[in-house]
Length: 121
Image (cartoon, rainbow, N blue to C red; front, side, top):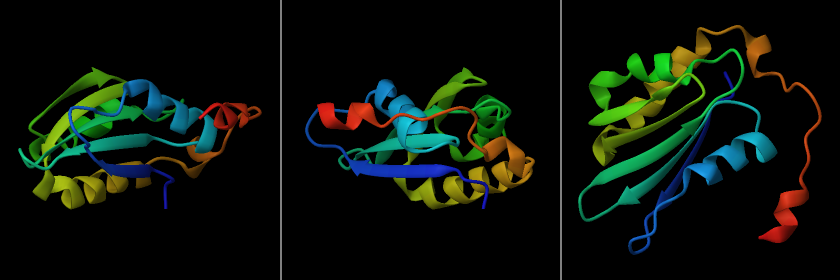
């Protein structure tokens, strides 16, 4: 397994996950490409935010999944996406396949992590 992390959450009212939350999960809880999806049950779409790590180009990875996405954009370290909820499983599988093509060393944490932000929630 490459170490790509997936978090799904049902959207409650008009609130959607912020890009900064995906970034915090990636930086503080998990070292690897991280995608956080918020579900819009009424429209049957998921909107997501991706954050990456050094050595993993999330923009290029999404490009290889482009046929499964309604729209997407970003750069090598961060991106946003919208996809139909019925495409989530196929998207997750394809993204993981792309991640598997990278050297495993890319997914080894570099530096020291801190968990201090958890106490502020």
